[in-house]
Amino acid sequence: MEEKLGQLLQIYQAWIALAQEARYLATDEAREKTNTNALALMGYYTAIAEVWESAAGDLLQWIEAVEKATAQRRY
Image 1 (spheres, one colour):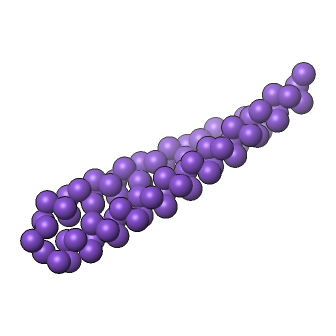
Image 2 (tube, helix red, strand yellow):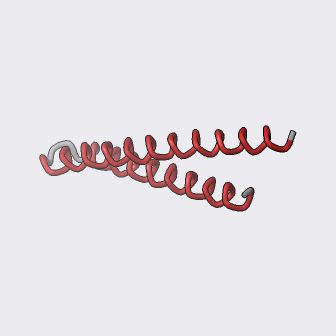
């Protein structure tokens, strides 16, 4: 079980990295404000980041709940 939780934690970290990359891309597009497409891409990348952050947060809550339940079973 701990191995699977470790794998899920790696997935969580990957999702956070994806969110950070999307935020970086949004910031990069914001520098190009003169281009309408850049503004649209900025919004797009920001939305992607929010989805990844939300999914990662949900996954982390689930991991913590499983860890808590597993610890309670041991005692």
